[in-house]
Image 1 (tube, rainbow, N blue to C red):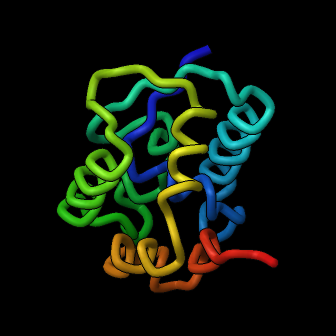
Image 2 (image 1 turned 30 degrees about the horizontal axis):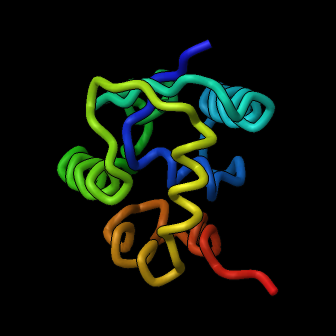
Length: 133
């Protein structure tokens, strides 16, 4: 099994709560997130542009308001790729990326990276990297 993801989606998967999508997109995200959770050694192909999570996005049909502005997500992809040492076109194990992400990220770093994102501004993922006691 190999899943294609753009770099910033590692942040999104961590904070995904199943909100604000239509039924098809919610099912796609649930399926992908569950696959990765159950198969942490799954191969993840790093790509730019629309990936496996974007395939059912209601914004790509033009019938819904688009939440993801390409200039913002492309910039975020570049920042996350640099932060995690990911190379576009390369394949990694999901678990390795997740471990590195959890080691590097903090609530403050998350805010710095994502504060321009519509999902962040809706408050849907702000707690993703808060430290728990």
